[in-house]
Length: 239
Image: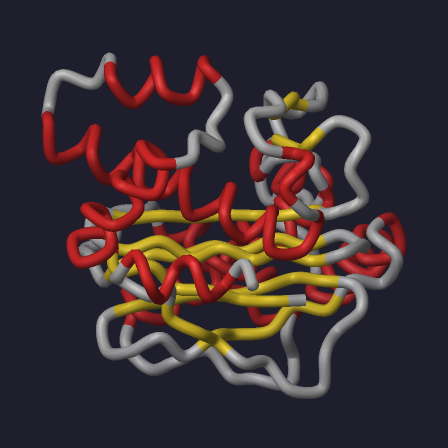
């Protein structure tokens, strides 16, 4: 299992050149990035796509170049027929990518921002996020606490493949009256059992960033690496 951060502004030129020299994207991915009116957003979208393809090739090999990504019924992308799995999340300027040879994996990333969620819903979300990772306390500060709880839930939903809306429904956060804590814990344990006992952990990426990973297996040490921003550095990843 590998975790990578991508400084999109710094890495975008080298990633675009890597794609020009050796195309790895499926045609639909290139067309999607090219169709974005905002050039900066389009460049970042292309960079994210190429970074994912390079990291998939690093594990699965070059034969998967240009193979289209398919989506399951809940929208989770994968390489049809490949054992490698991945998850990605990106915010303006930064991407987080998790890649593994096998097993469920989900990552999520948020930047610090003002959160406007009604108090009852907010309390339920924070309670669920806290229960998903009882080993690590949520941070102080109302918005920080909510955002860290949220990325835990999003990461778990991606590992499950169900999507965040379905997960929140299963946990009783939406569509029901407020659950007692013991009922919420029971639902979370049932949800974890569905994903082979996936473990959710926080990731430290720097001030103003909130991130989490949910995976099976749960590595004892989580090393977060930064994707090289030069062509030479990117090429070395594949050797």
